[in-house]
Image (tube, rainbow, N blue to C red):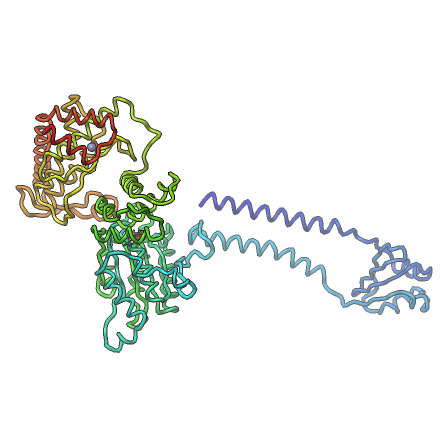
Length: 608
Ligand code: ADP
Ligand code: MG
Ligand code: ZN
């Protein structure tokens, strides 16, 4: 802000200097004509030297036949011919001169006014600007209270380009619910006649990349109504009142162009719980949120505007937003299951040349937990890989390779592990794989690799035999055990651990915590001690006190520690009893860098 102000002052000062120069030159440039007496003029007229006289009030501007200019004055009461006659000018000499009489204009006063006004105007503009800056955001344009919502021109986009429900795979129930909204917007009268109450606000809840934004666009495409697309973050400004003004503007515009959909993406950016501001802009956020609530309450029954919103953080939303008459329709979107994954892949490979061996079902099988966005990414990466290898079509192997790329980030060809690092990471990964293989409740190993990707030096992929919605305690414990497999293997083999296990430990602890706190799977019984451990900085947790005593807290910690300890013991036992197998598979892995499921199974069967 300071910097910005400074820049302005420089501009204003520079303008003044420039103006002064211009005025200065203007007056210097105008060479003042010589002033002569009236009698001298009379003399010149009689000698026929004068070509033209312009009389402006009492001032006479004279040009002689050589082009020289003079001025003189006459008495203001008498006429020009009278004055000249009284100085002895012969009348016939005067007739040969071009005489022009002009209305007197008070040039001096006008000049003065202009010269005085210009700086005044500049000062006014300058102060207005500063004032505005103090009030609003310094970085904002003059229209900073405009909502910035993008109106997706429904009328002018080609029908083919519109997103329709057909472009969204899976999410069947969700689409059915939204179809209702579309029907209403298309034909509101039908519903009003029935006295039906139409939801004012629809909130789409789901993890990142499940297709919330995509669905919102599809609603607009289906309904063919005006669609105001905006994101919660555009309402968040450091300066109080800006966001609220933008909300007001957005709703006014939408109401004027009803029927319409207002889509507020990332609602959590504005809709955060009030009274929990950390850092600046918290008053502002409250005002913005309040304005949103006011606007939604202010909708008349038949304003034909529906607010659709999306968030992946419903837990941080202010509860006032979810009250009846506001976002009263909550729709949860889940990551796709295998069938939906296949459908999503179909949509995203529709316009791509696929080789005969492509089996999208297999790709879907190998991508549990992937979001729609991840799958779109897999399809795209597959195409990129094929193109880079100068293929004419995309082959199955390209898709399979791209799964890992999406899962773990791009392959790091540039960073080659040292021999020792490679050995350690091989031991580590085989530790994971072996533990998983020995634990009946664990998912089978799909692939082990020590080709580093992303931040991981190596990786082991295990995949559940079937899609699972619920997990038992023993499955959680097996998961923790195999997560500790790398750690234990390193310890057995080298007598010490490396930093490579930090992520595993973090994940194992998180699972153990959930087992105790959320799922009631410890001696503490079925009581929830959940805390959203990952969002301390998002407000809620700071003001919300634990609903349990310090004594219970230390009990929880104890239980978590017991679970981890037991899992570690189990893993240790498995690995130390199978040290030979650990060594053999490690050797193969160091040599080949990757081991696929089939080979792993063979090695495992031979040794176990
Ligand atoms: P969100 O808003 O939930 O974070 P998006 O709607 O932005 O996710 O989804 C990102 C991209 O992922 C979409 O543009 C689309 O290409 C793809 N995608 C996500 N879900 C689906 C789906 N169900 N069907 C087809 N494509 C999907
Ligand atoms: Mg989105
Ligand atoms: Zn590991």
